Amino acid sequence: MFKMNFVIKVLLASLFFAPAVFAQTPKKIKTIIVDAGHGGKDFGAHGGYEGGLNSYEKNVTLDISNKLVAELRKQLPDVKIVPTRTIDIYQSPPEKADIANENKGDLFICIHADAVNLQTGRRQVGSHQETRYHVKYTGKGKKKKKTSTPYTVTVPTYEYYKIGSQRSGTSIWLFAAHKTSEKLKAVMNNEDLQIESGTDSVYNDIDFDTPEGRIRAKIYADRYQKKSIKLATMVDEEVDKTDRTALGLNQRQKGIWVLQATNMPAILIETGFITNHDDERYLNSDKGQQELAECIARAVKRYKDDIDHTAAIAATAPKVPATNDTVEKYTERTKNILKRIDLKQSTFKVDLYDDGDIDGDIVSVYYNGKAVLSNKKLTDKPISLNLTADPDKTENELLIYAENEGDIPPNTALMIVTEGNTRTEVRIIADEKKNGVVLFTKK
Ligand SMILES: [Zn+2]
Image (cartoon, rainbow, N blue to C red; front, side, top):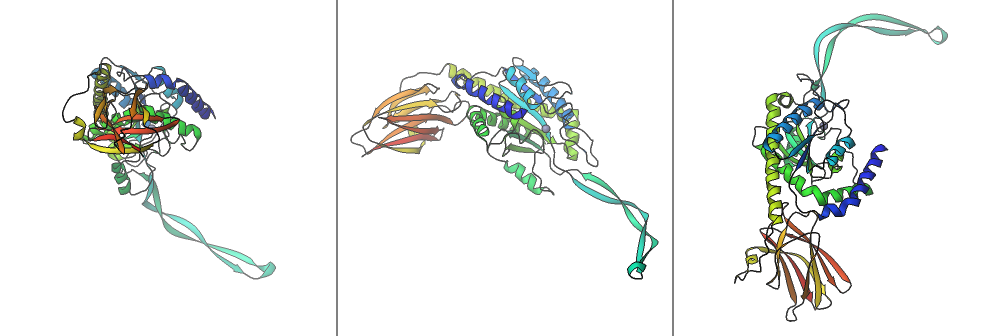
């Protein structure tokens, strides 16, 4: 009950503030939140199997998080690094999200450790004597009599134990990406037992099959999805450079609550399997913890450099006039025909916006081969073009050329075509290989 009220509150708050968020230009990374998963009475996963260290996820995540915070402060001295906790205390997911939001984080990194449900094994450790009875009945009716004759048997004595999992490696989770990565699928299929990964208690809190869930997912995807994927990809790449298995980017069918409750790009790193013999030792070792912290910090630094660079370019976007090249540059790329629109009259208006994130996408636009826009930065304010259909052509071509891909590739734009009272929306996608093309036909 509490949870649902909270979700609605966050939902309303973010809808209310939505215009302000959409209006922002790319900004530099100033604050990073590092969350050590679980804590206090919430122990998280447990390495409780034979030959295991009996360690708890909440302690491993705290150790890695503390090292990551130190590493980030060292590598990014001008960035404020805020840990959600530095000691063993309990925080509910809403509390963790509040810390991130109140500190106006530009990134939210959750540190967790994975687990699978463990199989139980048994082995014979000896034998013992048991008394059993031969039962015999004599007589009938009221005279029926039961006699039990005891005898002893030797039976094996068993010991039961949990079997550590085969599964190991580091995976990155997003609030809503696409699917389970091929790599993690492969690891899961080779496992002797078929249990879905992610027994972690941070999962399965958002149901997309509710109106709230759908709205949350949409808002989050528009604002933070691409950036979250970008950072997650970089972390995966850095892990892949070590001896550890990088299991790729993953998504749950249901959302990870804490990731979408934070108004910033967010990723969750399942650093390793606490139920796996080698992984558990790695996660509990200073060396392993430090290696993970350095990997994540390197990825964050790459991400920050990239975002800062784009923000700097966007701030000084060149406004050069159309080039007079005899061969226009767009001819070097293929055309991706996104839509055909039948015109009823010969004049129409085209408005162009950045689609979703305002991430510094810059475009040039050609109409019937002639430049009508050059090096324009897309924002949440429309760039308007009034166009006329060429009477000599059955098809008029509007071509969008991506001058860059913003800080979140590809270059995306929302095009709204207005003709009289008719309004048509087209999502434009362009990249360094393809131009986005809309054809206007006049009968
Ligand atoms: Zn966890």
